[in-house]
Amino acid sequence: MGAASGLATALEECLQDYAGGLQLHKEAQAMSRQLDRIGGETGEGINTLMTTGNIATAHMRMDNYDASLAIFLDVLPKVKSKLGDDDPLAVAFTNNLATVYSCLGNNSAARILREEALARRRRALGNDDVLTMKAVASLGNVVFDIGDYYTAFALLEEASASYKRVLGPD
Image (cartoon, rainbow, N blue to C red; front, side, top):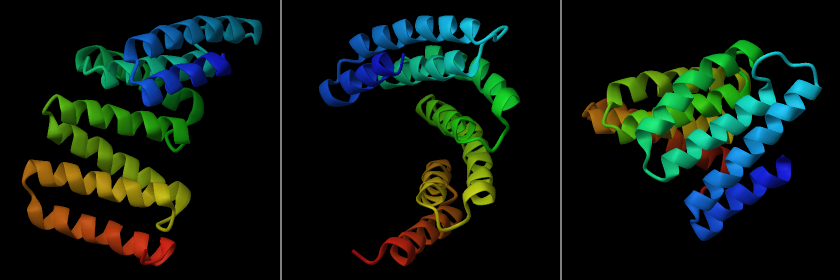
């Protein structure tokens, strides 16, 4: 399963073969279902949920936002239920769902999810973690797209200052 997922991601990111990547993600999902059943999972186990999220991301990369949205709306509550709201996978899927909403032009929904993800990153990782800084910048970008320029500027300035403080000025 891990090899199929890794190969699927390589096809997508290196070769931009999104259709090939999607097919491999689906094969990985089938293997994940088998692993979850062998492990005694009833319903969808975390392996299946993770590969299902990979399928949603593949759809997003192919600009098939409606399919991606439907999958993330289905899988995110299940991941949160199994792993908790602050789990890195739950936060990553929250961010991906926010991206889908942004791509569909629903920046209000994207903002809510970006705020939620940022709160979780701050709580779980603190302000000086790179993932928290990225979450601040992502929220700043969606707020800018909404037209709340003062808030966007403050968030993007915060992200920039944090990057410089933690990573250095270069």
